[in-house]
Amino acid sequence: MTAYSYSRRLNWSECDPGGIVFFPNYAKWAVDGLNEMLQLDGYAPNRKLADGGTEGIPCVEFNMRFFDAPQLHAIVVHQISVQRVGRTSFSVRHLFSGDGRTYADVLDTRVWAVHGKDGLRKSALPPEILSILNARTEPATAE
Image (cartoon, rainbow, N blue to C red; front, side, top):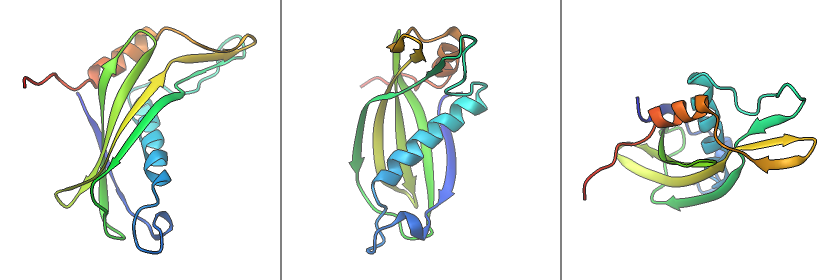
């Protein structure tokens, strides 16, 4: 299965007056895309637990690199691939591109967390999440 990908049009409201994507939009697209990928794979992020708490994947590290700027109304392809899966956390790569150019590359690290009566605490990734993430993990390449 590996990477999840979808396309979106760059709207006027997402750019600065010079036509460059306002950088927080990449962060919003990354979060929305990751949630959509998980939902399509059968898991609804931030679901309620039987005890009234919630579980989810808060961000603990987010690194963004910019390479080029799409033109207004360009179709931007957002590709998401899992880079690393640990016991309580995982990292995904968000690649934004179009017209044969890379616009931005994001490395996003998430921790599995449960929020309940004892507050917020990290927890082991559940088996169903491990299965989804492992199916989306990029194969290792020889260098």
